[in-house]
Length: 93
Image (cartoon, rainbow, N blue to C red):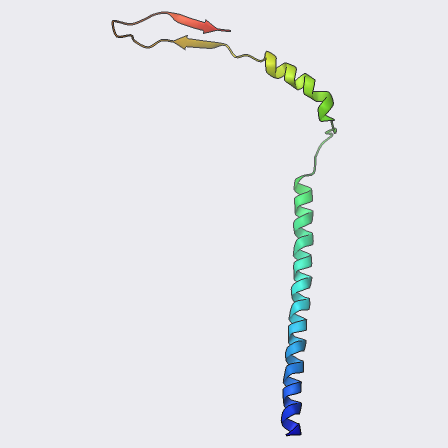
């Protein structure tokens, strides 16, 4: 009876060791993967060249002025009416 209990304990102990080893290997690979992902993400967000950091509050009025004053020359053409063709052009500024 003692020999049977010893074999069960040995089997249980080996199972725990295999589980701990698997968990350790998984943790190492996960940490390595996370570090590589973080480095890749940081490098993709890196600003290259001689770009300067700009405070958005200082540049916002300049950008807003450009947006408000931007206009494209547009021409409007009317399609045929029921009674005939209109040859007028409408210009919007």
